[in-house]
Image (cartoon, rainbow, N blue to C red; front, top):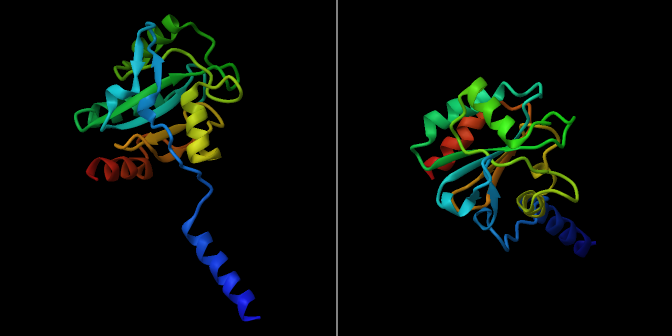
Length: 185
């Protein structure tokens, strides 16, 4: 009986100190690259030591107004080792049907976007960009976008610190507190 109690206590203690994240990090975010909307390489290694917010975006989504908040966050924190990265994807509801040029023109004209944007890619499934496959492997299901404007926060060490669903606005108190805590660490 005492042996069973010890095993139960051990299992309980282990459960408090573990989560569903594998986080072996054979690679870091800095090991990945995209192309920007003009087709030039966009290497995440250029952002080493910065907080990176990766957001899969779409021009025809109900959350598209979040571009405004993303730009506000970029304007406020870009001088503090911070980068926000817009990653267009047509994976959800075919809400990003445009070409890279059309996406660029839309973002600049409608929202005045000045933060880096990648070319349109897939963020889920078998055709997902390697960055998103890495995110799922190292952080679990919460790193996989369920819809447009899903946010992955990469810390200064190139590891996933937190993820936020589409409904979380980039200017929300919880999101801002997470960014500021990472910037101050």
